[in-house]
Image 1 (cartoon, one colour):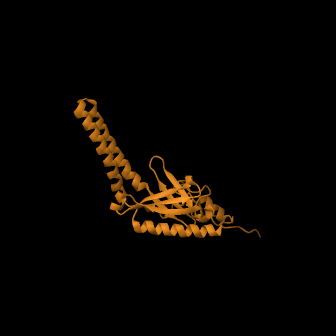
Image 2: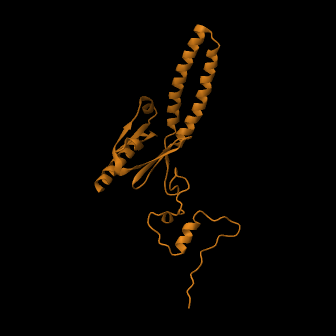
Length: 210
């Protein structure tokens, strides 16, 4: 007597196949599921949809403090005031028509950069995994840094005068390769200290295991 296996549940008519159809089909056909493979993680064989957001269902992204927006805008405003003061002095001394145009250009650029700054701060995020730390940022050019704990040499926390005024700090990660260094700005001091201590402990633990 010929044995027959139960067919995989078909996709309802008129509906496109789900992204996990390939993985489900391979499991239903009896293919082994390897730990750490896309099928085990619930992803299709092609991997995550976006290279800049790996494993979006299993990574908990943490945003930086929104107070960083205020710090960045104050820094921007200080430069705008300096430029406007220089243009005003030039206009008073020479009465040349180009100075008011330059002042208007500075104001327009400042408004545009302020909007970009708000969105850029909101784009910052970090996530802690078992073996590495993910840091993402950027608007036009998006960047995702994956820093393995075993490659961390040391972690330091810095805070300028303006950051301290708003109770913020920056965590700087230093690795064996300078190109893979990463930083996380706009963290409350308690979170920055916790992250520094945890990353340092994990780095030492992973380094001993190599």
